[in-house]
Length: 218
Ligand code: ADP
Ligand code: ZN
Image (cartoon, rainbow, N blue to C red; front, side, top):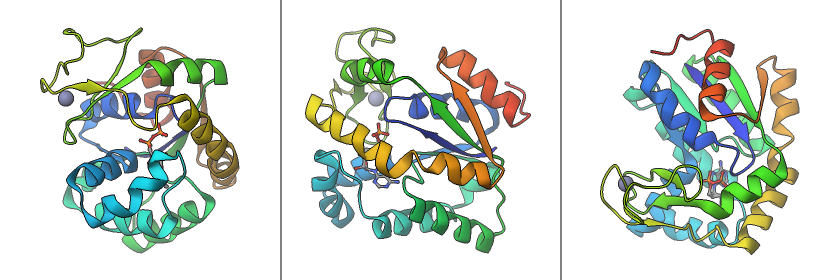
């Protein structure tokens, strides 16, 4: 499937995207994961992105489009892709539209995970992420804890609270989301691609997405 996952930080985009990759070989492309990997590696991209991310602000559109222009042309995208955390602004959505039409790729749907603010706040403060940049598995100390306290089930690395998951950075991220990203729902509505999905368990959300893109869970 070729889909965009929209939704506030904490809406469940990453969790859902990781599960969807198990269904049909589509790859998860998370700009947040790519950027955190670059910060950890200390690459030039990482150095440019670091301060924006720490403060809960968006990384400039040009940097993001540079990453995604390359990423979407890699061969593993042929089987489908799940865009998680991208596009995040109207200019990114416009640029993506141009890019996809140049590449001859058609999107199936833009899935908007519509989760109430109190649920989001609770999830973000209890979220933990594997610090290994090639894993970045997501846990939650309440709803999906690691088997061994503080250790990733998948790779054995340390599981940590992200630097942008302090209360202050979280409220900045939510404000940025409202201002810059929430308008994308209207954008994709007018493109005829929008599907809204309300809060539910991960399995319920997965089932609703599969129904929307007419894909059978494996
Ligand atoms: P979340 O969706 O939980 O906020 P992400 O992992 O998607 O977290 O992103 C973390 C940070 O990376 C964002 O706060 C932002 O600084 C940066 N970022 C990720 N994707 C984008 C994007 N498409 N455009 C601009 N900045 C981005
Ligand atoms: Zn891990």
